[in-house]
Length: 379
Image 1 (cartoon, one colour):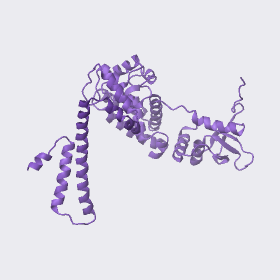
Image 2 (image 1 turned 90 degrees about the vertical axis):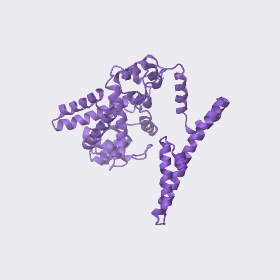
Image 3 (image 1 turned 120 degrees about the vertical axis):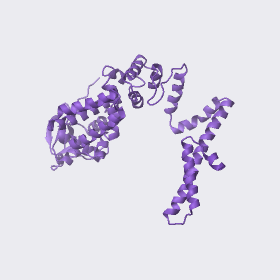
């Protein structure tokens, strides 16, 4: 087999002005927020990955043509900084393949690995500010104290995470100067930071000896929802038991491991292991993976599996639920009619306002589980 010569075999690294590079026709699209975010990162932290260019002899004003790295190039142009580049050479189809493969072959980060990188980026930004202000030790102690309070049940993990995300967002804005939309372009929105720090603070930090194995678990390892469910177990010892149960059985889901360990959901009673729980979990897990269209197509199969008694029970449950929803909608429609009349200056008498108030109140009580309609009608 003939081994092809690499496009990088004679590559040279050098520094150039972004305005001397012609980005030309690109395969991918430009996302301006992402370019601005990368430019800010390069301005503050320095450029980590060079762009790739090819000589552009036909245009003396732009002697280089971009091959890969559009967002880094535009980001450097926005910041007014030079950009590091590698000169490559090759046939047009080989250069197009290089651009396509660099984007296609990027490995998406699994939840645990992403959480580690996010935490490292956040920590680096916090340390930078702390050093600039001479308070590195105090900043590190404050973070430790926050999670010590969680461990001692003096503060909830959700409260600690909210505080930390607020601190982090302010830190990132101060270090990199980007707004929320720019952070979102790099996957660093407040919600994304919250999700990543939730996994890091509640799974990676407490169990450094288990998380690499957990990340490779066939069912849970790359399932962010199941990892967050484990992170939401309040008691650290119980969390460890669930993780160890998963590592002992590669076929368990997070819910099955919690049942096996007798661990309940947050805010609920402890789950009691039952012989058929695994089959319940298999049904609910499979159903949750179906889209709406697939669920609708499967409905006839559900009906065919039910006995006549089960069908009647299901009919009664559906009638009750649909009826309650109908009452709520009717009450809202009544209230909306009154509000619409008031908004347009139309006269509304007191009886009509009272009727709308009464309907909304009854619907709200019904939603809360208190059916007062019969009592009110009897009066």
